[in-house]
Length: 296
Image (cartoon, rainbow, N blue to C red; front, side, top):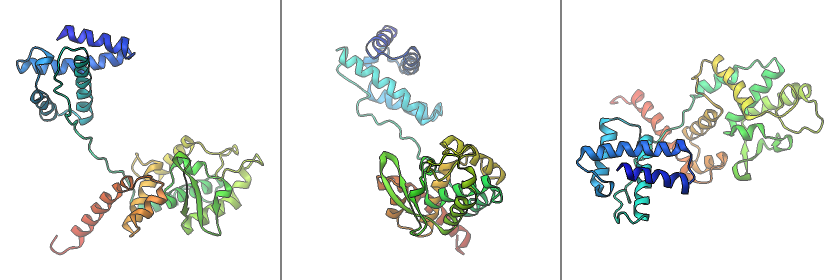
């Protein structure tokens, strides 16, 4: 087994061009697998059966309690070695072929409640020009489900007060039109009249939201500002700009919005991407049922 590992390491280094750290990571995973095989009485990689790999997965899950991502990485290393052995003619069987990796657990996006979103919106000091700007940015992001890159990239001509819509340039330069709620529209209007003129230092700058130096926001700049308001509003520390986007989608769905309409407003290419929010809505329904049904 050790000689095979050394040969495989040379293959990864010379032919695949992998770094020393990556090669060592492969070897650690394979030594782990080799130790398991020896415990099962198998002394050569080529003698392992498919059932040995199934048992190895079960051992990592149940006894060692490894994360699914760790298990998937180890199996990827094992697959790479068996592909190498087949290519080299050292075996005709690949016990890892067509063996499904454990699926990663589905992580539902974190969302804020409606009350928490409103509390966040009320946190910036609107009597201060910068506070008014920040309130307008947070309101527009939540009202339209914008990505942070879309928010900071908005230009003056892309917001229509008459039609109450914003034209958004999303991923892959795909354009979409999103309605803007009156609260957000009013705040952005106030910002444009009361705060932006004092921030503007470059006549040709057409970004809607400007820093105190008169330049467009960066994504990191807005995130840093949002973190301050998250702390002041006593919201979960991991609240991020994307949390507002998730909250928008969830609240729209809970309010009865059509899933395809939400897909259009979020700029998702596939409906399956948007369907993750239906799980959140079901959780909301469960909570309402438990609180309200006399037999719950």
